[in-house]
Image 1 (tube, rainbow, N blue to C red):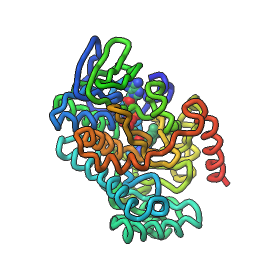
Image 2 (cartoon, rainbow, N blue to C red):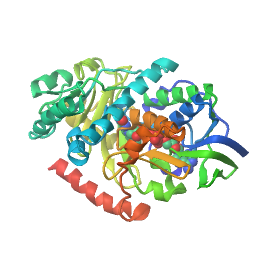
Image 3 (tube, protein in one colour):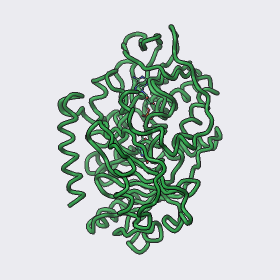
Image 4 (cartoon, helix red, strand yellow):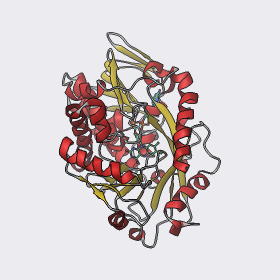
Length: 426
Ligand SMILES: Cc1cc2nc3c(=O)[nH]c(=O)nc-3n(C[C@H](O)[C@H](O)[C@H](O)COP(=O)(O)OP(=O)(O)OC[C@H]3O[C@@H](n4cnc5c(N)ncnc54)[C@H](O)[C@@H]3O)c2cc1C
């Protein structure tokens, strides 16, 4: 996929530790199905899997390889909820709607944990919690209020505020305290995605890799074209997220691709000295630092964003200062793996879920897609089957397109993002 090239995936820890997986032939010629899915990441594979479980024939068209998008290259942090705080959701949508939205989002974590157990996906799953570290001295005020809102208004009892002293037992770096959510954790995202693909195929799904969709035509039957073939289907799901590019500009203009970078160290002598309870950790910066340990005891660390399409010439050197600022003990540590990917963000940081005729879509999880993507794929198919409650909840809060659409969202949004990134530095 052109847009995803140059982000160093060939040098990713995930590719180096991926389980052996089947390859899938490219589409050639014409095919028919009940559902055609564009994109072989977790959104698309979950849609296809749950469609097949409902007895629908499903075909997935993936432009690259399964899991080569964000699903196979992300930080692997399971962060329960949405990218908007419970407090903000209550302020904007009222308590009842905020509760319904968050209850749905929290289901994503259980859906993924249960699916991993049910179909037997070996992906280093750890249900060790997620800690959000407070960067600013003023953060504890809103974090304590957030913990209270989650418990009292949303009815979610799993998150609590930790003081700076308590936080130090979670991670060996100074924070002004933070929010610990027992529902969080982490996993190996590429092995999860490959496992999802295996489960989908076992349920009867057909996958075509190296099959880039060039045109999607809505109608009584949706027609999806590639250079070498056509699939016609009753319904289509667009699951290309940040990589969807020109196929559906009207849909795609609600999301903004932002490049984000990750490194992994060599296995550490004493990884638990840094994160004793093996939690997933992120912080309250606008340009978030996020990190966790891998199953073989490495520090896997994401930090730094770029708003230009070109990747830094040396990704490890680009991320290193962020890593060393959090863990001085890792100064000069070897960084054998370094890669990047495209995160899709929306203006409101809520997912963009919706439909145009029989073309359904879900994307823009704004850095929270490790578990939300599987949920979104499922709820699209539930809606296609007539169970629209969950779909309606998200569709009703669909974020607006970026001003200026696909052409102008870049420059305008970049200005905004740079402003917030600058505030982090100040
Ligand atoms: C560096 C990075 C770190 C992240 N860290 C985290 C994290 O720690 N926790 C978290 O919750 N979220 C994280 N995210 C976000 C998360 O990875 C995504 O939200 C999620 O993976 C999106 O899944 P998806 O299936 O919708 O899209 P993707 O996984 O990107 O899949 C889309 C697929 O569609 C294919 N495609 C696109 N267009 C076409 C076309 N025209 N024809 C055919 N195929 C097409 C692509 O090749 C791709 O494989 C991170 C993202 C990145 C990039």
